[in-house]
Image (cartoon, chains in turn red, yellow):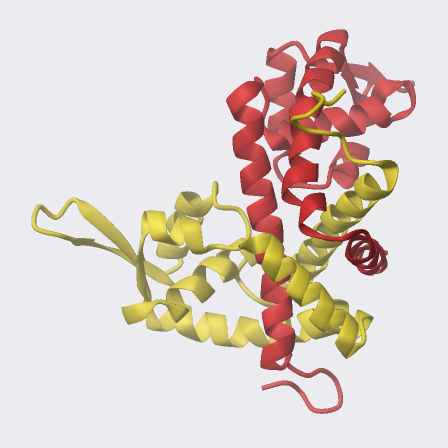
Length: 150
Length: 150
């Protein structure tokens, strides 16, 4: 299947590890999404957008910077910002000499919503992710993932 | 922040590991998506749908089963199947006594597209995922992820 000398296909063991990685991520996201929307007026994707804006200098990012910063789906970012704007949690502001650049800015309402939602979300991260590993395993997983993310 | 006795927030180290996990996944998906669409007429989400159908009994799944089976975004599955149907890679068939159930079925064209795309995709999984870890690390990551996915 693979072109010799250039690439190879994964072994069954390697493919199993890859699929477990995808399955673990899918399960985490589904469980955390379900818990979040049960208690707060935002989805996990919206939470991700609000976190990135809240942690940015002056609590604002250009749309392209925001798409790069989010940890979940970059493709839906414009629609997420649309919905957050309607909900009063984000505003869009023009900038630059010709006023053609657009930044997304988190509002006070956005910050308040994020603060409340983060209690649910972070408790879920502990319960569904951290608590399933001992500290050495967690450190090892974190280090490997940091390498993959480079 | 956390409610005492019920839940707690992650430590900085724990949160870093969690974010690295999300970042690693985001990077893998982005790189593999870019490589796939450069060479084949399907996105990574469509690839995921085709794989699940190709591996299912009789190469077909009910829409709800398909949404549960995919490893990437379950929310976009209906739209992905719409596009794959237009492209001739999937058909929808009615089933059941009243004909109200719908299954998605992968076509021969879908199988052929998947086979060609899998060479690109699986080589990418080796290059961007497998090759960044030694066999022990990969086994350990796989085992931890399998536990998280349960």
